[in-house]
Length: 87
Image 1 (cartoon, rainbow, N blue to C red):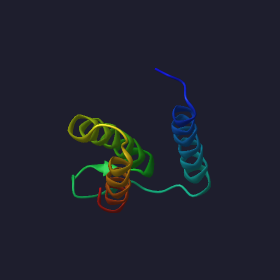
Image 2: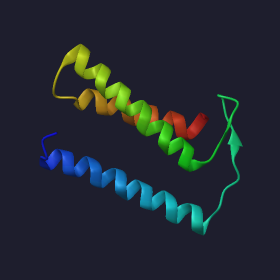
Image 3: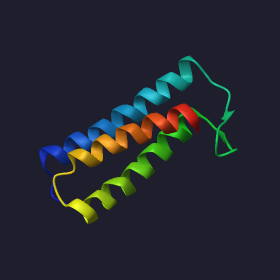
């Protein structure tokens, strides 16, 4: 993997999201909720599902359209919003 500024920003963003979710869980614990998947999920679970799904969306975008993946990132953002809202 090439360590470029984009790669560094990506991993730093994930690290900040994990720290933010940890602080959120400590300060304001939330009970798991059941969404459209009919499984109990916490905000941390939904973050994981968002990151996992976003990886597949970006790979599919690269396979269909190639680089750059700005459009794929927009799709990932909408997907993450949907996961946090309904899952």
